[in-house]
Image (cartoon, rainbow, N blue to C red; front, side, top):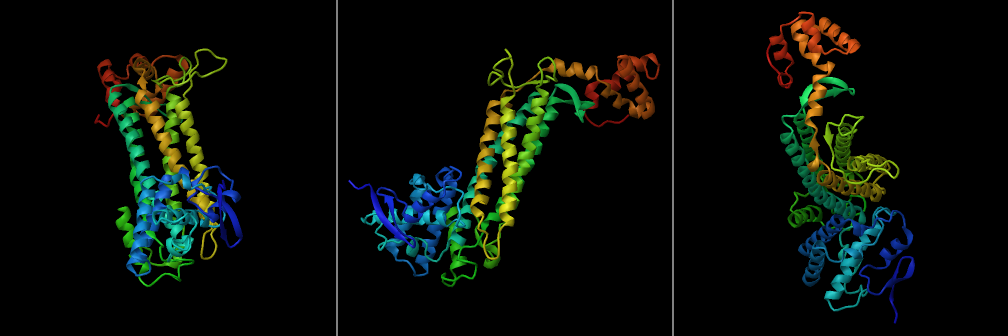
Length: 466
Protein backbone atom coordinates (compact mmCIF):
# COMPACT_ATOMS: atom_id res chain seq x y z
CA UNK A 1 0.00 0.00 0.00
CA UNK A 2 1.28 3.45 -0.90
CA UNK A 3 2.25 5.34 2.28
CA UNK A 4 2.76 8.69 0.57
CA UNK A 5 0.85 11.21 -1.47
CA UNK A 6 2.49 13.48 -4.03
CA UNK A 7 2.21 17.24 -3.66
CA UNK A 8 3.81 19.93 -5.77
CA UNK A 9 5.03 23.50 -5.31
CA UNK A 10 7.35 25.95 -7.08
CA UNK A 11 10.25 23.49 -6.95
CA UNK A 12 8.36 20.44 -8.18
CA UNK A 13 6.82 17.32 -6.66
CA UNK A 14 7.60 15.78 -3.30
CA UNK A 15 6.35 12.79 -1.34
CA UNK A 16 4.38 13.64 1.80
CA UNK A 17 3.27 10.99 4.34
CA UNK A 18 -0.26 9.92 3.42
CA UNK A 19 -1.69 10.56 6.88
CA UNK A 20 0.11 13.89 7.45
CA UNK A 21 -2.00 17.01 7.75
CA UNK A 22 0.99 19.10 6.70
CA UNK A 23 1.97 19.38 3.03
CA UNK A 24 4.79 19.85 0.57
CA UNK A 25 6.32 23.06 1.94
CA UNK A 26 6.40 21.67 5.47
CA UNK A 27 8.02 18.50 4.12
CA UNK A 28 10.72 20.57 2.42
CA UNK A 29 11.41 22.31 5.73
CA UNK A 30 11.67 18.93 7.49
CA UNK A 31 14.21 17.82 4.89
CA UNK A 32 16.21 21.05 4.85
CA UNK A 33 16.33 22.30 8.44
CA UNK A 34 17.69 19.63 10.76
CA UNK A 35 19.24 22.23 13.05
CA UNK A 36 18.25 22.51 16.71
CA UNK A 37 16.13 19.41 17.21
CA UNK A 38 13.58 21.66 18.90
CA UNK A 39 10.44 21.55 16.80
CA UNK A 40 7.48 23.85 16.58
CA UNK A 41 5.47 21.06 18.24
CA UNK A 42 7.51 21.67 21.40
CA UNK A 43 5.98 25.15 21.77
CA UNK A 44 2.20 24.71 22.12
CA UNK A 45 1.56 28.39 22.85
CA UNK A 46 3.23 29.33 19.56
CA UNK A 47 1.00 26.84 17.72
CA UNK A 48 -2.03 28.33 19.47
CA UNK A 49 -0.80 31.76 18.39
CA UNK A 50 -0.76 30.60 14.78
CA UNK A 51 -4.29 29.25 15.12
CA UNK A 52 -5.50 32.52 16.66
CA UNK A 53 -4.02 34.47 13.75
CA UNK A 54 -5.49 32.21 11.09
CA UNK A 55 -8.93 32.29 12.70
CA UNK A 56 -8.86 36.09 12.97
CA UNK A 57 -7.75 36.36 9.35
CA UNK A 58 -10.52 34.03 8.17
CA UNK A 59 -13.14 35.95 10.17
CA UNK A 60 -11.93 39.24 8.70
CA UNK A 61 -11.94 37.85 5.16
CA UNK A 62 -15.47 36.52 5.68
CA UNK A 63 -16.73 39.84 7.03
CA UNK A 64 -15.17 41.67 4.08
CA UNK A 65 -16.82 39.30 1.60
CA UNK A 66 -13.67 37.46 0.49
CA UNK A 67 -14.45 34.05 2.01
CA UNK A 68 -17.70 32.10 1.82
CA UNK A 69 -19.54 31.29 5.02
CA UNK A 70 -19.15 27.51 4.94
CA UNK A 71 -15.39 27.66 4.40
CA UNK A 72 -14.99 30.32 7.09
CA UNK A 73 -16.83 28.23 9.68
CA UNK A 74 -14.79 25.14 8.82
CA UNK A 75 -11.52 27.12 9.11
CA UNK A 76 -12.64 28.59 12.44
CA UNK A 77 -13.55 25.13 13.71
CA UNK A 78 -10.15 23.73 12.68
CA UNK A 79 -8.36 26.62 14.42
CA UNK A 80 -10.38 26.10 17.60
CA UNK A 81 -9.40 22.43 17.65
CA UNK A 82 -5.71 23.39 17.34
CA UNK A 83 -6.09 25.88 20.21
CA UNK A 84 -7.60 23.06 22.28
CA UNK A 85 -4.44 21.01 21.73
CA UNK A 86 -5.31 18.78 18.77
CA UNK A 87 -2.96 18.22 15.81
CA UNK A 88 0.12 19.69 17.56
CA UNK A 89 2.21 16.73 16.42
CA UNK A 90 1.57 17.95 12.86
CA UNK A 91 3.95 20.88 13.40
CA UNK A 92 7.35 19.19 12.90
CA UNK A 93 9.34 22.17 11.54
CA UNK A 94 12.59 23.05 13.33
CA UNK A 95 12.27 26.32 15.24
CA UNK A 96 15.42 27.61 13.58
CA UNK A 97 15.14 27.82 9.81
CA UNK A 98 15.83 30.09 6.88
CA UNK A 99 13.06 31.91 5.06
CA UNK A 100 11.96 34.42 7.72
CA UNK A 101 9.35 32.03 9.10
CA UNK A 102 7.75 31.00 5.81
CA UNK A 103 8.06 27.30 6.69
CA UNK A 104 6.19 27.79 9.96
CA UNK A 105 3.50 29.93 8.35
CA UNK A 106 3.01 27.34 5.60
CA UNK A 107 3.01 24.53 8.14
CA UNK A 108 0.01 26.20 9.78
CA UNK A 109 -1.66 26.93 6.43
CA UNK A 110 -1.27 23.35 5.25
CA UNK A 111 -2.43 21.72 8.48
CA UNK A 112 -5.52 23.91 8.72
CA UNK A 113 -6.33 23.39 5.03
CA UNK A 114 -6.13 19.62 5.35
CA UNK A 115 -8.25 19.58 8.52
CA UNK A 116 -10.87 21.59 6.62
CA UNK A 117 -10.66 19.21 3.63
CA UNK A 118 -11.32 16.31 5.97
CA UNK A 119 -14.35 18.12 7.38
CA UNK A 120 -15.58 18.69 3.82
CA UNK A 121 -15.28 14.98 3.07
CA UNK A 122 -12.30 15.49 0.75
CA UNK A 123 -8.88 13.88 0.66
CA UNK A 124 -5.80 15.52 2.06
CA UNK A 125 -4.06 17.49 -0.66
CA UNK A 126 -7.19 18.29 -2.68
CA UNK A 127 -6.39 21.95 -2.37
CA UNK A 128 -8.76 23.09 -5.10
CA UNK A 129 -11.47 22.88 -2.40
CA UNK A 130 -9.46 24.58 0.35
CA UNK A 131 -6.04 25.98 -0.44
CA UNK A 132 -3.27 26.71 2.08
CA UNK A 133 -2.36 29.82 0.09
CA UNK A 134 -5.60 31.05 -1.47
CA UNK A 135 -7.88 30.47 1.53
CA UNK A 136 -5.94 29.99 4.79
CA UNK A 137 -3.29 32.60 3.88
CA UNK A 138 -5.79 34.95 2.22
CA UNK A 139 -4.95 38.67 2.72
CA UNK A 140 -1.74 37.70 4.55
CA UNK A 141 1.91 36.99 4.04
CA UNK A 142 4.42 35.34 6.31
CA UNK A 143 5.73 38.80 7.10
CA UNK A 144 2.61 39.79 9.02
CA UNK A 145 1.06 36.46 10.06
CA UNK A 146 4.27 34.95 11.45
CA UNK A 147 5.41 37.80 13.76
CA UNK A 148 1.83 38.28 14.93
CA UNK A 149 1.65 34.58 15.85
CA UNK A 150 4.95 34.90 17.73
CA UNK A 151 3.50 37.77 19.74
CA UNK A 152 0.32 35.82 20.52
CA UNK A 153 2.48 32.92 21.69
CA UNK A 154 4.66 35.14 23.87
CA UNK A 155 1.66 36.86 25.47
CA UNK A 156 0.38 33.45 26.56
CA UNK A 157 3.80 32.23 27.69
CA UNK A 158 4.36 35.35 29.77
CA UNK A 159 1.23 34.57 31.78
CA UNK A 160 2.67 31.18 32.66
CA UNK A 161 6.07 32.63 33.57
CA UNK A 162 4.53 35.22 35.88
CA UNK A 163 2.47 32.51 37.61
CA UNK A 164 5.63 30.50 38.29
CA UNK A 165 7.38 33.62 39.55
CA UNK A 166 4.52 34.43 41.93
CA UNK A 167 4.72 30.92 43.40
CA UNK A 168 8.41 31.15 44.26
CA UNK A 169 7.95 34.66 45.66
CA UNK A 170 5.32 33.23 48.01
CA UNK A 171 7.76 30.49 49.04
CA UNK A 172 10.57 32.97 49.81
CA UNK A 173 8.13 35.17 51.74
CA UNK A 174 7.00 32.19 53.82
CA UNK A 175 10.63 31.47 54.70
CA UNK A 176 11.08 35.12 55.62
CA UNK A 177 8.31 34.76 58.18
CA UNK A 178 9.62 31.41 59.42
CA UNK A 179 13.11 32.85 59.97
CA UNK A 180 12.02 36.21 61.39
CA UNK A 181 13.77 35.63 64.74
CA UNK A 182 16.98 34.02 63.43
CA UNK A 183 19.70 36.61 64.09
CA UNK A 184 22.78 36.42 61.86
CA UNK A 185 25.56 38.54 60.44
CA UNK A 186 25.01 40.46 57.26
CA UNK A 187 27.98 40.62 54.93
CA UNK A 188 29.34 43.01 52.34
CA UNK A 189 32.17 42.02 49.99
CA UNK A 190 32.12 38.64 51.77
CA UNK A 191 33.26 40.38 54.98
CA UNK A 192 31.35 40.80 58.24
CA UNK A 193 29.04 43.81 58.12
CA UNK A 194 26.25 44.26 60.69
CA UNK A 195 23.60 41.97 62.17
CA UNK A 196 20.29 41.21 60.51
CA UNK A 197 17.82 38.35 60.56
CA UNK A 198 17.69 35.43 58.21
CA UNK A 199 14.07 36.40 57.74
CA UNK A 200 15.09 39.81 56.40
CA UNK A 201 17.44 38.10 53.97
CA UNK A 202 14.74 35.80 52.58
CA UNK A 203 12.14 38.56 52.49
CA UNK A 204 14.61 40.55 50.37
CA UNK A 205 14.72 37.66 47.89
CA UNK A 206 10.93 37.78 47.63
CA UNK A 207 10.94 41.57 47.21
CA UNK A 208 13.57 41.65 44.46
CA UNK A 209 11.78 38.96 42.43
CA UNK A 210 8.43 40.66 42.93
CA UNK A 211 9.74 43.72 41.09
CA UNK A 212 10.11 41.61 37.96
CA UNK A 213 6.40 40.81 37.70
CA UNK A 214 5.59 44.34 36.58
CA UNK A 215 8.65 44.44 34.31
CA UNK A 216 7.64 41.25 32.50
CA UNK A 217 4.00 42.30 32.18
CA UNK A 218 4.80 45.84 31.04
CA UNK A 219 7.26 44.62 28.43
CA UNK A 220 4.88 41.89 27.23
CA UNK A 221 2.25 44.58 26.70
CA UNK A 222 4.31 45.79 23.72
CA UNK A 223 3.29 42.60 21.90
CA UNK A 224 -0.33 43.77 21.59
CA UNK A 225 0.62 46.00 18.63
CA UNK A 226 0.58 43.85 15.47
CA UNK A 227 1.12 44.30 11.74
CA UNK A 228 -1.66 42.10 10.33
CA UNK A 229 -2.67 43.56 6.96
CA UNK A 230 0.84 44.73 6.22
CA UNK A 231 1.33 41.75 3.89
CA UNK A 232 4.82 41.69 2.39
CA UNK A 233 6.43 44.97 3.50
CA UNK A 234 3.75 47.07 5.16
CA UNK A 235 2.12 48.68 2.14
CA UNK A 236 -0.95 46.48 2.47
CA UNK A 237 -0.73 45.04 -1.03
CA UNK A 238 -3.20 42.11 -1.45
CA UNK A 239 -5.19 43.08 1.64
CA UNK A 240 -8.53 44.88 1.21
CA UNK A 241 -9.26 48.32 2.60
CA UNK A 242 -10.01 48.15 6.34
CA UNK A 243 -8.46 44.71 6.76
CA UNK A 244 -5.68 45.72 9.19
CA UNK A 245 -7.93 47.42 11.72
CA UNK A 246 -10.68 44.81 11.52
CA UNK A 247 -8.27 41.89 11.79
CA UNK A 248 -6.68 43.40 14.93
CA UNK A 249 -10.17 43.84 16.40
CA UNK A 250 -11.07 40.23 15.63
CA UNK A 251 -7.77 38.99 17.06
CA UNK A 252 -8.46 40.89 20.28
CA UNK A 253 -11.90 39.30 20.51
CA UNK A 254 -10.53 35.80 19.90
CA UNK A 255 -7.54 35.99 22.25
CA UNK A 256 -8.79 38.27 25.00
CA UNK A 257 -5.67 40.43 24.67
CA UNK A 258 -6.05 44.15 23.80
CA UNK A 259 -4.64 43.76 20.29
CA UNK A 260 -4.33 46.88 18.13
CA UNK A 261 -3.09 47.54 14.62
CA UNK A 262 0.32 49.24 14.42
CA UNK A 263 -0.01 52.90 13.35
CA UNK A 264 2.71 52.51 10.69
CA UNK A 265 2.75 49.08 9.10
CA UNK A 266 5.91 49.74 7.09
CA UNK A 267 7.72 50.53 10.34
CA UNK A 268 6.12 47.66 12.23
CA UNK A 269 6.99 44.91 9.73
CA UNK A 270 10.79 44.87 10.24
CA UNK A 271 10.67 46.21 13.82
CA UNK A 272 11.80 43.79 16.54
CA UNK A 273 12.08 46.27 19.40
CA UNK A 274 9.37 44.59 21.48
CA UNK A 275 11.29 41.30 21.41
CA UNK A 276 14.49 43.01 22.52
CA UNK A 277 12.91 44.70 25.51
CA UNK A 278 10.99 41.60 26.61
CA UNK A 279 14.13 39.49 26.30
CA UNK A 280 15.89 42.01 28.53
CA UNK A 281 13.22 41.41 31.18
CA UNK A 282 13.90 37.67 31.12
CA UNK A 283 17.62 38.41 31.45
CA UNK A 284 16.99 40.75 34.39
CA UNK A 285 15.00 37.99 36.12
CA UNK A 286 17.77 35.49 35.41
CA UNK A 287 20.43 37.81 36.82
CA UNK A 288 18.51 38.14 40.08
CA UNK A 289 17.70 34.44 40.23
CA UNK A 290 21.34 33.48 39.70
CA UNK A 291 22.48 35.88 42.44
CA UNK A 292 19.99 34.31 44.86
CA UNK A 293 21.29 30.84 43.98
CA UNK A 294 24.85 32.03 44.59
CA UNK A 295 23.73 33.19 48.03
CA UNK A 296 22.02 29.90 48.84
CA UNK A 297 25.16 28.00 47.93
CA UNK A 298 27.30 30.26 50.12
CA UNK A 299 24.92 30.26 53.08
CA UNK A 300 24.72 26.46 53.02
CA UNK A 301 28.46 25.91 52.48
CA UNK A 302 30.14 23.48 54.84
CA UNK A 303 28.98 21.67 56.81
CA UNK A 304 32.14 22.08 58.91
CA UNK A 305 34.33 24.43 56.91
CA UNK A 306 31.83 26.91 55.52
CA UNK A 307 29.13 29.32 56.67
CA UNK A 308 26.54 26.59 57.28
CA UNK A 309 23.84 29.08 58.29
CA UNK A 310 21.16 27.18 56.38
CA UNK A 311 20.53 23.62 55.24
CA UNK A 312 19.33 22.89 51.72
CA UNK A 313 17.26 19.75 51.18
CA UNK A 314 19.63 16.90 50.23
CA UNK A 315 18.65 15.86 46.71
CA UNK A 316 21.52 13.68 45.41
CA UNK A 317 24.75 12.07 46.62
CA UNK A 318 27.46 14.59 45.91
CA UNK A 319 30.50 12.58 45.01
CA UNK A 320 31.65 9.31 43.49
CA UNK A 321 34.72 9.35 45.75
CA UNK A 322 33.93 11.41 48.89
CA UNK A 323 31.51 9.56 51.19
CA UNK A 324 28.82 11.67 52.86
CA UNK A 325 29.19 14.65 50.53
CA UNK A 326 25.97 16.37 49.43
CA UNK A 327 26.10 19.22 46.92
CA UNK A 328 23.72 22.15 46.34
CA UNK A 329 22.60 20.67 43.02
CA UNK A 330 19.34 22.61 42.69
CA UNK A 331 20.86 26.10 42.94
CA UNK A 332 23.64 24.87 40.64
CA UNK A 333 21.25 23.80 37.90
CA UNK A 334 19.29 27.06 38.18
CA UNK A 335 22.56 29.01 37.85
CA UNK A 336 23.19 27.16 34.59
CA UNK A 337 19.70 27.95 33.31
CA UNK A 338 20.41 31.61 34.00
CA UNK A 339 23.65 31.46 32.00
CA UNK A 340 21.64 30.04 29.10
CA UNK A 341 19.20 32.94 29.38
CA UNK A 342 22.06 35.44 29.27
CA UNK A 343 23.35 33.86 26.06
CA UNK A 344 19.92 33.75 24.45
CA UNK A 345 19.40 37.43 25.23
CA UNK A 346 22.60 38.16 23.31
CA UNK A 347 21.26 36.06 20.43
CA UNK A 348 18.12 38.19 20.42
CA UNK A 349 20.26 41.33 20.29
CA UNK A 350 22.24 40.11 17.29
CA UNK A 351 19.12 38.81 15.53
CA UNK A 352 17.25 42.09 16.03
CA UNK A 353 20.20 44.11 14.74
CA UNK A 354 20.54 41.89 11.66
CA UNK A 355 17.34 43.07 9.98
CA UNK A 356 17.76 44.87 6.69
CA UNK A 357 15.44 47.28 4.94
CA UNK A 358 11.76 46.18 5.08
CA UNK A 359 12.10 42.83 6.90
CA UNK A 360 14.03 41.07 9.63
CA UNK A 361 14.67 37.55 8.37
CA UNK A 362 16.23 36.44 11.68
CA UNK A 363 12.94 36.20 13.57
CA UNK A 364 13.06 32.37 13.76
CA UNK A 365 16.17 32.32 15.97
CA UNK A 366 14.99 35.42 17.79
CA UNK A 367 11.61 33.92 18.70
CA UNK A 368 13.17 30.58 19.56
CA UNK A 369 15.65 32.22 21.94
CA UNK A 370 12.93 34.07 23.84
CA UNK A 371 10.56 31.09 23.99
CA UNK A 372 13.38 28.84 25.15
CA UNK A 373 14.20 31.39 27.87
CA UNK A 374 10.61 31.36 29.10
CA UNK A 375 10.44 27.56 29.12
CA UNK A 376 13.79 27.25 30.91
CA UNK A 377 12.86 29.88 33.50
CA UNK A 378 9.46 28.30 34.16
CA UNK A 379 11.10 24.92 34.79
CA UNK A 380 13.89 26.46 36.87
CA UNK A 381 11.50 28.45 39.06
CA UNK A 382 9.40 25.38 39.79
CA UNK A 383 12.47 23.26 40.47
CA UNK A 384 14.04 25.82 42.80
CA UNK A 385 10.81 26.29 44.71
CA UNK A 386 9.71 22.67 45.03
CA UNK A 387 13.08 20.98 45.50
CA UNK A 388 14.97 23.65 47.43
CA UNK A 389 13.31 26.75 48.89
CA UNK A 390 10.35 25.12 50.64
CA UNK A 391 12.67 22.68 52.40
CA UNK A 392 15.35 25.10 53.63
CA UNK A 393 16.01 25.05 57.38
CA UNK A 394 18.07 27.41 59.55
CA UNK A 395 21.02 26.64 61.81
CA UNK A 396 19.93 29.18 64.41
CA UNK A 397 22.72 28.66 66.97
CA UNK A 398 25.45 28.88 64.34
CA UNK A 399 23.99 32.15 63.05
CA UNK A 400 23.80 33.67 66.54
CA UNK A 401 27.29 32.49 67.50
CA UNK A 402 28.75 34.23 64.45
CA UNK A 403 27.09 37.47 65.51
CA UNK A 404 28.45 37.25 69.05
CA UNK A 405 32.01 36.72 67.84
CA UNK A 406 31.92 39.14 64.95
CA UNK A 407 33.98 42.33 64.78
CA UNK A 408 31.17 43.79 62.69
CA UNK A 409 29.04 44.68 65.71
CA UNK A 410 31.53 47.45 66.49
CA UNK A 411 29.72 49.48 63.82
CA UNK A 412 26.91 49.99 66.32
CA UNK A 413 29.33 51.87 68.60
CA UNK A 414 30.06 54.60 66.01
CA UNK A 415 27.29 56.97 67.14
CA UNK A 416 28.39 56.64 70.78
CA UNK A 417 32.22 56.59 70.80
CA UNK A 418 33.09 57.86 67.31
CA UNK A 419 34.57 56.24 64.22
CA UNK A 420 38.22 56.56 65.29
CA UNK A 421 37.82 54.88 68.65
CA UNK A 422 35.56 52.23 67.14
CA UNK A 423 38.27 51.48 64.57
CA UNK A 424 40.88 51.08 67.33
CA UNK A 425 38.61 48.66 69.19
CA UNK A 426 38.01 46.64 66.02
CA UNK A 427 41.73 46.49 65.22
CA UNK A 428 42.67 45.36 68.72
CA UNK A 429 39.92 42.75 68.71
CA UNK A 430 41.30 41.31 65.48
CA UNK A 431 44.88 41.30 66.75
CA UNK A 432 44.21 39.86 70.21
CA UNK A 433 41.22 37.66 69.60
CA UNK A 434 39.33 39.44 72.37
CA UNK A 435 35.69 40.33 71.88
CA UNK A 436 34.57 43.85 71.14
CA UNK A 437 32.37 43.65 74.21
CA UNK A 438 35.22 42.84 76.61
CA UNK A 439 37.57 45.46 75.16
CA UNK A 440 35.04 48.28 75.61
CA UNK A 441 34.51 47.29 79.24
CA UNK A 442 38.23 46.87 79.93
CA UNK A 443 38.92 50.38 78.67
CA UNK A 444 35.99 51.86 80.61
CA UNK A 445 34.59 53.46 77.48
CA UNK A 446 30.95 52.59 78.28
CA UNK A 447 29.06 51.11 81.20
CA UNK A 448 28.03 47.50 80.97
CA UNK A 449 24.36 48.47 81.05
CA UNK A 450 24.76 50.87 78.13
CA UNK A 451 26.96 48.46 76.20
CA UNK A 452 24.45 45.65 76.61
CA UNK A 453 21.75 47.90 75.26
CA UNK A 454 23.79 49.04 72.25
CA UNK A 455 25.18 45.64 71.31
CA UNK A 456 21.99 43.68 71.75
CA UNK A 457 21.68 42.30 68.21
CA UNK A 458 17.94 42.87 68.26
CA UNK A 459 18.55 46.59 68.64
CA UNK A 460 20.68 46.62 65.50
CA UNK A 461 18.03 45.33 63.13
CA UNK A 462 16.27 48.64 62.44
CA UNK A 463 16.77 52.39 62.75
CA UNK A 464 16.60 53.87 66.26
CA UNK A 465 17.53 57.04 68.13
CA UNK A 466 20.54 57.29 70.47
